[in-house]
Length: 521
Image 1: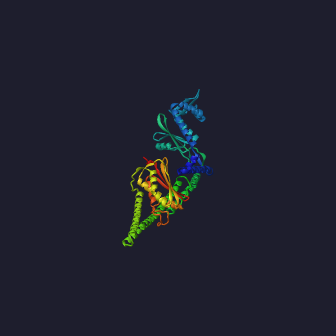
Image 2 (image 1 turned 135 degrees about the vertical axis):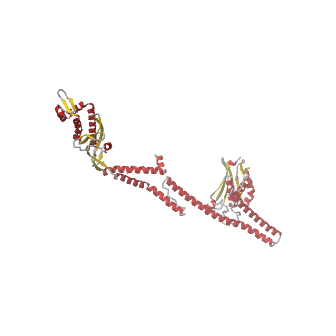
Image 3 (image 1 turned 90 degrees about the vertical axis):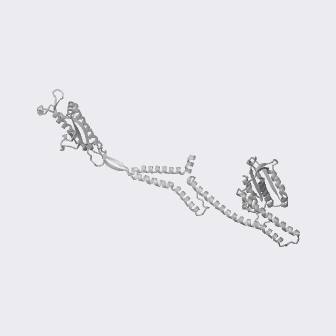
């Protein structure tokens, strides 16, 4: 059941199907309940019995004429037994009345009893009897339509056989409001060896029938119920879609902080989620563009300042030399040494900027070698130990005793580690300790460098790897550097498929480098 509910909540298609089914069910129930209140009673005439009676009379006549050709004696006796009037008229009839008529018939009916009648009299009796019973008009015609025998009261002498055949083929609807139809039946018969037609025509009797009909009102009520239910059921979903449309308009106006309420878990809810995600991504992209513009402005400002400061010093001391504003050779050498030192500082800044650009845009090709990382770190610390002592800080080292061999570019890794260690010396709070630790696990090698420092804000910590970013507020600070060291370090580590991140807590900052072990041969 829970899976079914989840499926309904997450599928708009199933929701529409269920809504449609519920609306059909409701409209059907309303139609069925309303039907008894809108019943109309309609009176109609049913001619079924009358038509059947005419058909039976016609077929009975056809049978009697066929029997007349095959067993006329049996037919006469049968008619006498059924009709006392026939018996009274033709039984023991005087033969003298039939003299001169060659078509007379004598049918014995027991000892001393005989039926005497002519063939025309028998035929006339047969066609008149149904008329008396069912008010029928019976004709016997030649093949061309010439009437040979007819019931009493008929004045025609000839009929159109083709029209009679057409009328005989017509079917009568059993129930017809107030019309009194005419039924015609045509039977081929043989009389005295000749082909003839037996035509039976009559008006069928009718029976009043009362029919109850509901009309179209219940169906209209069912249709209205379906529309109303479908509207009410889908109203909440349409409202959700309208809110999404309004939200899109708001986002299109530039309000990227606007968020659409996510009311459902189906496709419409997923659409709202994706729109919110799109707005968030657009907002972040625009924010990144703004930050990039800001960094670009900072880049221009910082590069201009960092290049101008040593260049100004070089030009100043060279002007002193050019104008011979020195007292002796020792002072001249001092001016030249200072200018040379500033030029080296300027050269290093330009090289750092060039290297950072190459590393950032994958413009450098690494020359990897198998080196011992712990030995490399120990050698670096030995080289930087005098600088650390000058800054009143001490290295505390914890490295594995066994060699940790990896395939890396030694020059680039040395530069990255040197930037981290130099940065730790430069910004450590004296006196203090710089802890350098190295750990090896199954998948990677981890190098961490931590040192005490001044209080840092969250923004300063997150921007530590930004290019040209320096923690000190003024670029004229006595802490030299252009703010490219950690940015270059991050690029080198990432190009080795590694990671570097910073943690800060209680005025202690720690930089952690992770290098994957799959680089080892």
